[in-house]
Length: 393
Image (cartoon, rainbow, N blue to C red; front, top):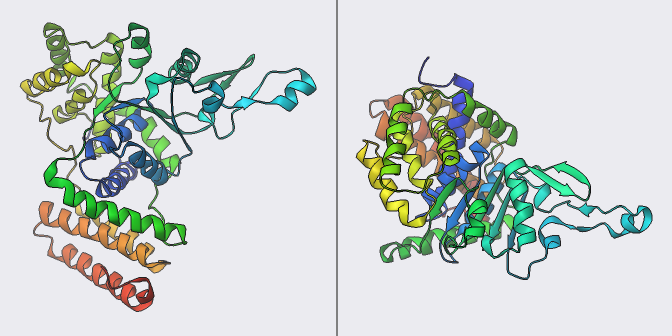
């Protein structure tokens, strides 16, 4: 079995990874969050984001859903939130007409692809019990009817992990965990710069300017199916040793979590364009902790078994794949409709240029093609969109 996926699927996986890079470029210090959300979506699992308000959790999710063109539902839970605010209100007319109890779920959590619930552990027992069935079985009990839910992934956010034993079973359903904090002092300037660029893009979007480069949900489903085909045989011994070390260190890591960890490892390999998992893919284990106090121990154990936790997991793409990206950009250049379209193409070309210089320094011909493409986009920006501030490149 070759390490790489078959070409079409590999291109799809690496295109998805490139769209993730687009999202990362829009935020400072949120690469882990983007990776965790992506892995959760690929695995059809759920993720918990732990950190204070104002750390861009909602913004990252909205950008992610825009890229996927996925339907989303976001809500802040409080102790007083009613189930109808999350799952939908009763269809009063039908109840009066037929005596049938049904909830209208259109546009509500059971009807969307990705959901985000802030302060998730503040939900009432009625809400959390319903969520438990949704995240476990993708089923919503609507009156006497079991309805299949469209939910791919539920993202929950909280300031901390609850100590309440009653919540432990629900909390354990979130396979992935990511701790967030405010960006460090030396990144404040970068936050302002990137944040202002995002605000400008949002204003332009409101006035019909460029949109977000998307990724088709059908392609996502193909990648989800492909996770089952990833070969884990090469890392299973190492995974077993790490799990045994977790037990020796008294790390809370349930058998269910250990089994599902394999799917997370497979998804990480897939994002790197591989059909066989490698040692570096075990780095995802550092995001599968149950108790927050175990996070540092898990990282130490994983690193102690020779896993490069800090590695990005990115694959070195061959020139054919880079040229394929360049061809796509050229086609998009032919139909640009606004200045921001050009700026987005320039950002993508800049990343291609950096990738070629880092991974294929002798590929002078390909490098020149990217530079010529940059010059063409800049010319379009200056000639067609001067009134939109086109010289600001």
